[in-house]
Length: 267
Length: 150
Ligand code: SF4
Ligand code: SF4
Ligand code: SF4
Image: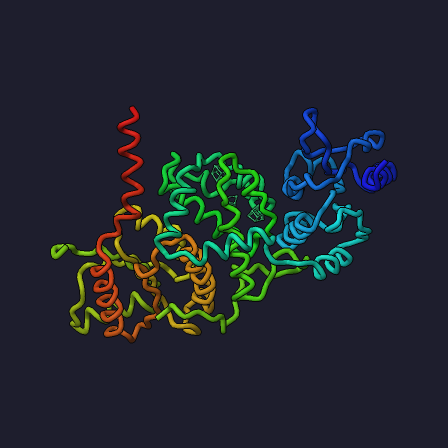
């Protein structure tokens, strides 16, 4: 039995939690999320390099939340998501037990949010290297080239909203895109509407995206929409020296300000 | 493009820039008539989606203007707006959407002449850039596509 399975079993048996959210191998061998409520069934829980999905998005879902206290298998992005959700008062720290996973795949002992905070603080909080490289590459392009790139990528979007659904920070019960009075985003998937949709989503995640890359992974058309939010994560740090999801009492970047915030374009 | 008259939408706050624009009028200062002014309670209320809507509906340029920092009627609305526009500008730059079409300014209720100047310079710049076809085309292309598909 793996460490994770053993720990999950212990948590469920002692009734410290009522459900453990983790990963298991599906019938075809593909990794999928697992919700284990029975201590006898924790053996299915696994962790390997294919376990990439950001499980934190389930923490705010009614179907999972109503089961009771939740244990969750959490790599760094998941831990940061949990911090973010606590700071935005979407989940309560006392209802969550974190089965932390270190960068090299070992089970960490995360006793409480302070321990988690210490772990997050000594980790690399920038965007993942391969995404950061792609960002640097895109940032070198001219305005026209950038527009062409995004116009082409986003013209493929079918507005399935998998990017939104997979993101832990897109927890709104009624998303602005679903709002039709006023209709901010056209219903049909046309290029202009798709671009509007992605601007809206990126702006809503400014200062909140924890760079997990889940939105991009979830997209059935491989649209790198995570680069939009990651670019803003980068800029959040450049301008305001804030990394999202690093403490439970973090102030929301976009609903706070410093009088001396620097900009150079307002005349 | 000699006969091109740019359409410019101005989103302004009620307390400073709108009053400033009023002063421009009462001071009998002439300025470009290309601008359509839309009054908002505060710059903090100006949603970035309104800008996209304007472009999609045919605007060639946009002005966002409110009270100078520390002069906000609601104390901090313009500071919040400032953060929002910093992020918005970064996103636009990253997506290759030309920010030269958007003017951000602080114009107080006493700056009637300055408002004329902001409008005139914006209209001149947008006239130079020409109609915002790349954005408007995206709206139309898909409509044509849809029609041909049917
Ligand atoms: S896109 Fe915006 S409104 Fe929609 S779920 Fe995400 S954060 Fe909420
Ligand atoms: S990378 Fe995507 S899924 Fe992850 S937090 Fe950012 S926006 Fe959400
Ligand atoms: S997941 Fe991809 S196709 Fe679906 S709405 Fe997001 S970007 Fe568009």
